Length: 172
Image 1 (cartoon, rainbow, N blue to C red):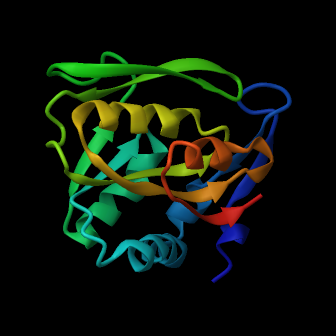
Image 2 (image 1 turned 90 degrees about the vertical axis):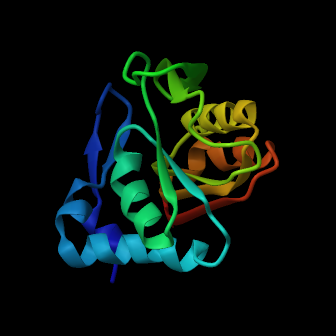
Image 3 (image 1 turned 120 degrees about the vertical axis):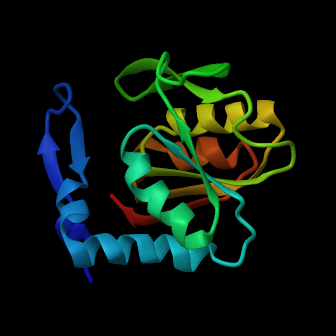
């Protein structure tokens, strides 16, 4: 299946000059959604993933079914103020501004084998911030996994510089 045909390009969203890659048509297509999740499962099955850590919000749409299929726990990383218990916070830059993310302070135990999942890799800011949060918790990060990579923004380079493997299935 050509998953790229189920991803639409939306120019000037959320601000002028950004070409947004919208995965909602893929998510709405039963065969496309299954094929996308199967890509992740085929790549990471048998690697001992204990927790899939997904980034708000589109990362949840891929991370939750992946965690289920791998028999792993699911850990949400959220925008500030959304998690009810004690959290750690990490600031980051993205291609059109700055933001911060939070994770529950007890989300994973020391040495837990974690996989960071999001829908799209751009500059690597959100994924890098997530990795720094997991490092603060003492997690063992197995790598990063993305459905889409915008290779011209060099996010892969910054994540690989952190010493972790990067997987992306569709590249623009």
